[in-house]
Length: 235
Image (cartoon, rainbow, N blue to C red; front, side):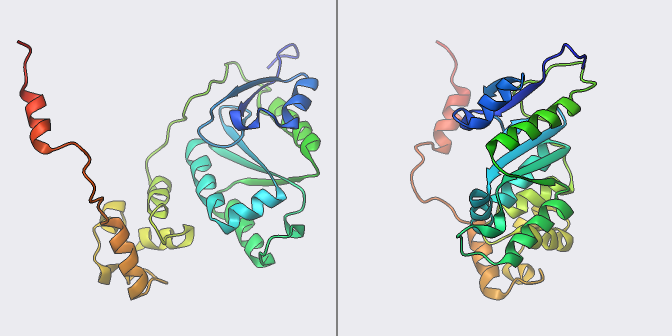
């Protein structure tokens, strides 16, 4: 990137009313709004950023959204950055300090993400601009709102298993170690599921039932109709 090149930052449409955007523009950044697959900002083809305040961060730990979002970010981008505005340890949420420590350890130690604390939205914008400027220093191509390629392998398998009811990040890793593949996991019997460390008979039954649940409603599509449509020809 030359000195004359303007720093470009992609921002999710949910950030449209954020004071971060106005600050970025005042710094000289070219901000493009759109629907991002993951994160709130993309500062290069390699780096995605998720901005949230301390309360949102803690709430996402409690409801599990943080771990799913982190997994999707690491699947789509080589580098993930979490920008947390405020002090996560000083919110009014009923959460143990150890839970916050565990979440931070997961983000850094398991997902390989960077976690940065900032004071407020203005500080977020200032840091985003600096990060983007550095990331785009030698950039010779433009960025686009498109889904990055998801490479197959262990990380994708872990994310798939983790999406099953009753399975968290740690249990997903244990399940993959035991069954070696997503297919073997979803076709496992209740007894086989209990072989996963930390999974007892009752939880195994719930997991087994959730995987095999089937909607009893009428979808309006029947096999005969599909067969007929595939053999119909124009008159």
